[in-house]
Image 1 (cartoon, rainbow, N blue to C red):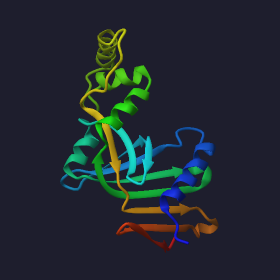
Image 2 (cartoon, one colour):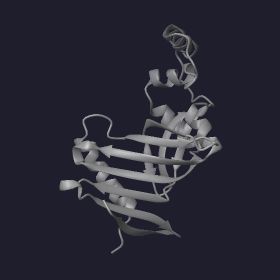
Image 3 (tube, rainbow, N blue to C red):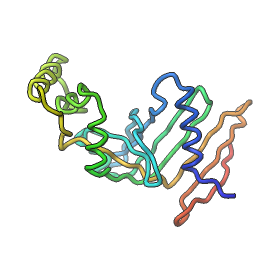
Image 4 (cartoon, rainbow, N blue to C red):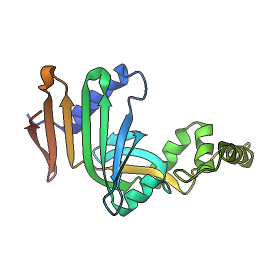
Length: 192
């Protein structure tokens, strides 16, 4: 029987949610600019399904600029407690406004206000400037809901390759590779 990599990811992710002390949904996101210069940072996975893996950010940030210039990315989950990694590569698209609105509404109020106050990835002269901007947003939205800023939303990485890496003794690791093949997946193994 053919393995569905999303089902396998769902199983591994559920185990990580139980064993990882902090941020089991933390994932390294690799992007590259138009010239191919790579950049890497941690983001939080906020959802996944057959359409892809979703994270949210300021769409005026460095990562957003790189994704606009080169709409492909790689993700890496590393769950040390399980001695496992999952690598995902594929094209990136924007999550819908409805999805972005729904997720934004689920965030804490201070996180919502921070999305308005921050010019993410841009130079900041001093911390007090950001604190003042945050306080200004508190006053602006006092007593009312904080709507999603127009420059903030989700991105979806549609997997073309998914690799499941399991640590084994003596560095004899197991590596299972799934690659898109039409509407399905082709599965193989890689040398450790």
